[in-house]
Amino acid sequence: MQRVVYLSRQEAESLTPEPGAAIISISDSISYPAKLSDQFAHIKRMYFLDGVYGEESIIQFGPNFTIAFHNFFRKPHAEEIIAFLQSFDITAVTTLYVHCKAGESRSAAVAKYISEYFHIPAYRLQFGTLNQEHEFLKANALVYQLLCNPTCFDQLINFNNPGHLKNRDTSWSSLSSLQKIKFKMFNY
Image 1 (cartoon, rainbow, N blue to C red):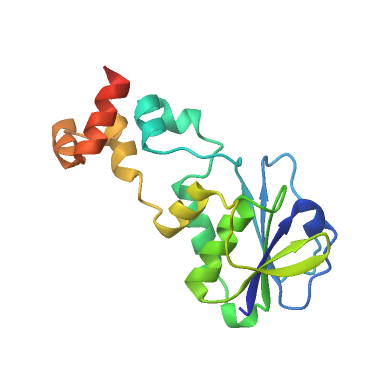
Image 2 (cartoon, rainbow, N blue to C red):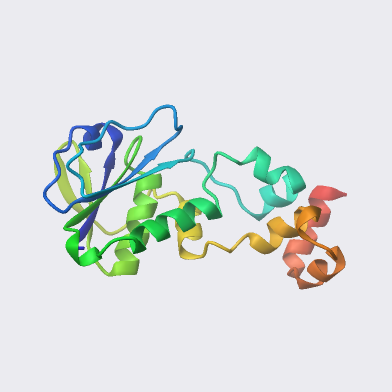
């Protein structure tokens, strides 16, 4: 893979890819997929909203967290993207495109991860102009965090979901002091 390019849905739908190009297509809903060229060598379609959450949200929503945030980027999404990147010979891919609706948040976070993981340059395609990206100012922090560490919230999510645990006391002792304070703040 020579480069990663992130762009808007509109630009992705009008793109005629070069031979060997792949794309990760990010849309809000499965009922509204992007209309992409069939000339892409590999296409991965993902569906999640552009939003963030953190420890506070997980604690506040407790066992309802996965229901309340089911449309947000979570561990399974990160694992799907990582598996997709491992599913083909990256030396055969010329450019990996990543698009989302506006081409600046979700797609930027994925492009940042790919650029750093594979040590390749990242570019932003905007209004038909390709510019090398270094700062990723609007990249979705949650998407990037979970791609770098898909299990980063597991302990807290499992603690807040009693169905995952046989002994809550064991998990309580493994939480950090800050996590315990936050849990008490939102649950008492």
